[in-house]
Every structure is written in structure tokens, then in C-alpha cells.
Image 1 (cartoon, rainbow, N blue to C red):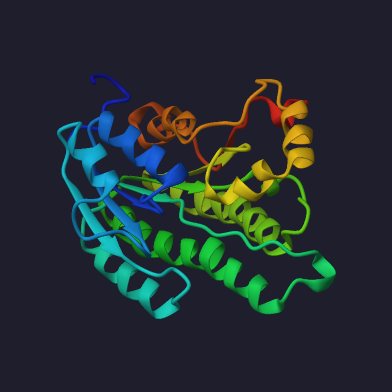
Image 2: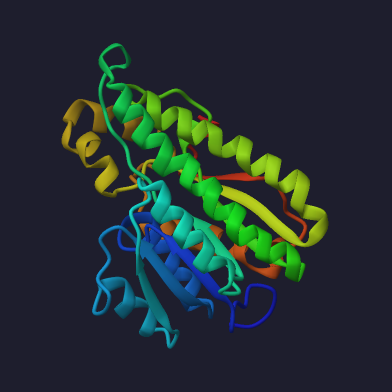
Length: 252
């Protein structure tokens, strides 16, 4: 790849790279030329599917295992990444726990916020500090349709993803003038493990599909183009944006 979208020689850290949306974005970044550091709580040290996908594009891959629900482990990871000259940070890892709000255990709420919001800020803070010193860098968060809507039975997830939009704008306000672009992608309904329960419910699945103008569930690969754009020089004047990739859901 050549031109403004070329990522050749850049190092990208992708959290949650082992599967789903993170897998799709990491693969697309590798195809555009980036070397990948994949972070996940369950990733194998070698021989993973994402490693094979990245190296198939001629790029290097390194796996880091980290449980983002563990604040101390996140702090250690941030310290390591701060000295690693990361060019692109994709803050994607997340979890979802479903129960009606009146019955939603506070422990679930706190766990989801730790993984989906607090750890994301901590990593952005650590990596962003190094980027500011070098005067360049790209940070991409994974937001959600629930950054705009409330959802059903997922109050912790909705709170975390709404919080992501605020963090993105706050960091962009402070860092855009120093050459660090901070933005987010808001996936629509994507066929991943996190949406398996919805896809397995015939009524919910039909209701969701009826509202998506594109007429289908998204695939993880559908996020690749947006990720490459926000990671590349093509987005050098894009700051604090939450970019929906949703098949038209929000326009309905």
C-alpha cells in the first residue's frame, strides 16, 4: 500500500486482538503495513490465529497476555508500552454482562467499567504520554451504538461506552495540537461472541435486522477500513470523532 493510508513500518497495539472486532482491525492494519502487538487475556504466546493472519501479510506479530480487569496488570502493561514507541493504539478490548437494571449486580457494573473504560483510559494515558513526547501518534477507541443509546439489560456496558465518547473528546481537546489524534469507531451490530445471545434470540435478531438499512449483521472485517483511516496520515486533521460503522442504524 502507498499514499496517505500506508502504515508500513508503524507499530500498532490492538487490545482484544484475539477475536471479533479486534481481530478484524488488527488484520486490516497489518494488511496496510503495520506490525502488530496483540493484547488479550487469553491469547497464546505463539501460534494464534491472529498471529497467522498478521504474518500472512508479511508483518511481525507479538502477543501480550493481560487481564484488563486487573488494574495492577493494566498499570504494568501501560509502563511496558510507554517505552515501546507505539505509533498506533487501538483500545478495543471489552466485555458485556446482561441483566435487567433492577437486578444488575453492582460487581458486574464495576467489572464492565474497569475493562471497557478505566483500563482503556489508563492505557491511553501511558501510551499517549510517549506519543506526546515524540509529537505524533494515533489512538483509536472502540465505542458502540450504546455510546448514543441506552440499550436493554446492559447498564454497565452503556455507561462505559458513553464514557468512551467523553474520554475521546477530552483527550482530543488536550492532545490534537501536539500531533496525537484521538478518535473512536462505533460498531453497529456485528456478528461476534458479544452479540451471540442476541443472534440466538429469533425475536431480538429479527427486530435488529429490520432496523439495519444494510439488511445484515456486520462482520468484523467491516471495521477494517475505518481503523486504517483513523490510524493513517489520511486522518491527520480528524480529532475527537466517533465514527459509526453500523450499516445505517443511526440514520434510521
